[in-house]
Amino acid sequence: MRQSGICLYADAVSYAHVKTGQDGRAVLEAKSFPKDYKPSAEKLTLVIPRNEVHLRYLDFPSVNETEIRKMLAFEAADIFPFKPEEMIVDCALAGESANGYSRVMLWAVLKDAVAQKLSRLKELGAVPDAITVSAVSLFNQAVRVYHDDKGYLLVYVDAGAAEILYIKNKRLELSRAILAAAGTPAQESTQEEIARVVGQTIAVLADQEQPLDELIVGGASEAAGLAGALEEKLRRPVRLDTSLTSLGGLAVPGGIRINLLPQETRQQKDKALRVKAMVYFAALVLLNISLLGNIVFVRLKAKVEYLELLKKEIKRINAPATALQQKMLKAQALQKYVFSGRQMLNVFAELYRAAPEGILLTSLDISQEKDAGKLVMAGQSRDSESVLKFADNLKGSALVKKADVTYITKRNLAGSQIADFEIRAEF
Image (cartoon, rainbow, N blue to C red):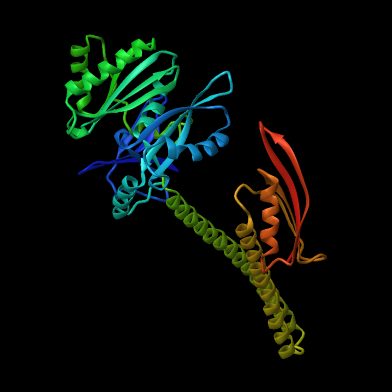
């Protein structure tokens, strides 16, 4: 599935297919939206500008991202000047220290702002798979190109909006939007205003004794003019890199990953995917049953024709009775295969519905002859509670008479704990 990205401006849409070249730089193929949008063949990420998102850097006494997210759920309301129900929040690790602390970036955006963008996309016939921030995409792209341990100050300008990123040792140490003078919209920021903010940032970095090895300007058509203006006003060399774009980091593996897509939108997409998967699964099962039925039918038909030929040679003894018996055998065989296929489809559908998130089945044994109606399944889970919940869900099913957990064994795998289990059920 290819990666695509989209930026929404006041009177325009920037949409492109994105991939990473061998040199680490982004390769963008500009497309027309929604004409070239194929939701079944691409992952669409909405990129929102830095000046619409709030960012805080925090230090937490943990290096476990799951634990950090739980702590942030209680801290976010005190960090930003908004009510929890007014925000969408996500975090990413900026780095770890030797004393067991983590530097965490906490991103927040107002739900109303996101709702407006989603509404606009919905009118165009699209729902994004994820929402990220231009600063995150720029950072992921920049560290692929500037991957040494130097200090880089990146100034990015696009559609009149500008932002600053300070990258040191391949970490995003600072990110801020450059706004115009008081009372002036961000898209009207002048080169003088941008140069003033960049100069202030350089002075702050110098006071903190942070290295600044290179000043880089990236972006669209405004970038070249801004690079020249900064060189003149700041009296220091400036590198122009127009390959850096707000969509360029979407296809980079690894890096910082945040998703500000509202939870309700995620649930709707997950539900749609589950329904789609069930439809495909049911179609595949029915297709297999149909193929099997056709094979049986062809074989029976050949057998009937052969028997009829023999009966003609022995003077058609008892022809009416034989023909009736053949039809009954054919009907019974077809009925058997149809009933078996439907029963298996119901069992698979019930297992899919009852399995909590994180359950992975590695073995499934369904008895159809000696111990008909018995089912033995084995698999793995992140914890014991998910296995017990799986068994309880099966017990509450109208199709399953009995479901018992045979064993749960915990073990470590690649630094994480998993639980091996076996469940026996009757249906």
